[in-house]
Length: 390
Image (cartoon, rainbow, N blue to C red):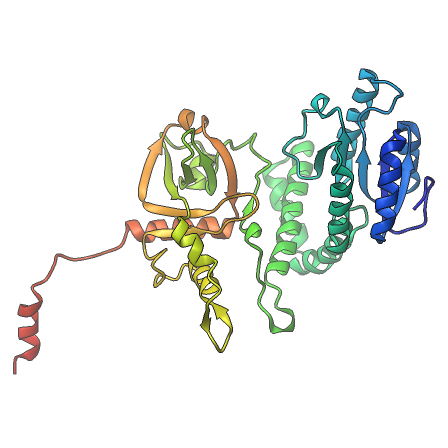
């Protein structure tokens, strides 16, 4: 820990000019014995120099908004601009620790911007959060030259180059050139196609990995993502919206219709909330299977997520969506189907989007539910007569 650049592989930068905050911050940071060095700067100029000098090793920023002897709108605005710059260019958490949070209303929904109002507990809360992120390894995942950088480059080399044999790359480029003879379009389209192949090949290698003969198991949060291409598609198949009364809906209109704007109404399936009884059953710690140690609650979750039709919660009518920090979960009700106009749907709030495999599974089950067959009821006693006849 120091007020000048350190040699640690993990550095936390603190921007603070108030000694009443600096001293307890330094003291508690030292007391926690974190695997990191703390660099304290009392003005923005020194802070930015410390960042540049230690860019590769800085894993977390803690910034006060005002760094003058008196309140200064100019100082606050300058610091806010630097926070925005760091947010856009650096993949690290930024704790905004200030008594002037009312001046900073932007980036409220961004996960790496953590706003803390200065109070008697805020210093401990910030350092405890940093400790959790350090001990979990999170701070070394997304940072510059972090594990994700290294893994992506390794996977690109392993996965991407193995996608092609002989002259396949040249043939792909020629096919793109045929449809995009103009140089600017040709170049941008080539980049788009090969970048998508690279990302997809990395993902498929990761999701299909079976090292040590163990299947890949995903966290519930991996079933969902927040779409960033909402400018192109304000809604898309697999999106979950919530209306003004709190009801949630799954967008079931096919992707091709949405992409080509070939629709009059949007097809939605209502999502039922997880009931108190269902929630209690998911939490049951009673052992269901002595051989495996699986509890009744774990079994109920497993059979719901895997869409076991013998599970009374899902059966043929419902598709379970597990809760995550981003989404409270629920059951897509394949019987509660409505259509709404695009204008009405746009008055709803976009909650989250399902990843492709879960989206496809919900659509599959919806199609199966709508197309389920059947014949007119039979007089079973009369049918039995034919079976018993000599």
